[in-house]
Image: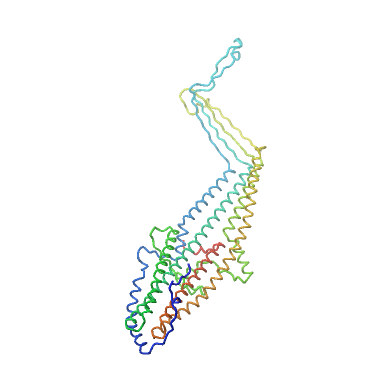
Length: 513
């Protein structure tokens, strides 16, 4: 969001030269300004400012914003549910190696008892050979129950499935950590962006106040015949150009504010005012900061190494590579693909299990009585070992193994690709951080010089030794220098936030949750 100077600025007006004002006129100008100018100017400027406390305004520090985001982020809530799902899959995988016990019971009421026909000669040797006898099998009521126990002894897919489920859980844990890093970084950037937008609005408000004050002074002097109509006209044009910029800056700050409110899931219509001031933040001496600015500095990871120190850069990149969530996720995904390949290969192995059955059957006529009397019941018990070995499944297993092997190779290539991109991003952010810090140092000096120049120009103008043009130029230079410093600080903080996220070093442990 670069700083834009007024379309019609002091540089756009040709200089006419500044003749020295006679001593008597200078004294009259000073007395008239002290008597009327400031009395009129300051109340008018104050009336234009919007009181920050109007409406439901919620003051937020960076730590409070991050705490709310970590506790109430919908993205993190979804990631936590995904982790719960992974935990359930681990428990499900263990069921493949634990014993299985089933109980089945049934009651059958025969409306017509099943019958079959046998040769009568079976029962009576004198019966004709072609004579048949109908024999009923069963009774009106039939009862049966079976208690079955199966204990896998060797089942490769189940054993490997436990490891695969554990790897999937580790992957979801890393996804959750990555989501937390991403959420924290997004909130930090939104917070810094809103700070910058509010800073621009504040700087433009101060600029409008200064120009309006000068305008009122100049009008008063013009009425007394101590200033020209041209000076009044120039300041009126300057105010007319600054006021739309101030409105646009306030609108931009309001848009950034709405983005932060939405991200923090605050009630609709809530107004937030972030704490801190970029233009007052001291990056050279972090201990010199106070209040919200101190918290902003503290909620950063370790400082970046000197880009000219190759050994320090290499050591820091090794740390970043070890903590990078993106790289860790693709590594865990590759391990999961390896487990899936082994699970498919285990389909070529036999399955061995122990089994045992306990059966109770009963039959009885008439009204149903649960399993009848003791004489109407029969029992069965058996145990054994079952071995199952698929011989041919239409090359289904081979095709699945080939699919899993291809997925594994693709994941290995992804690891190399993500690692290379990680190095490029690290070096780019390192350079951005260094460049922003250099700009901060340069702009700090520019602000001090511009402030000193404005004070000198103001004093000379009041004494009649300087022109209105010089005073306006000094004000524009001060405003631009202050915003350029705030912009450089913003760029540094944003680069540090992305660098912290890249290496997984966001100091979330220091956030009150």
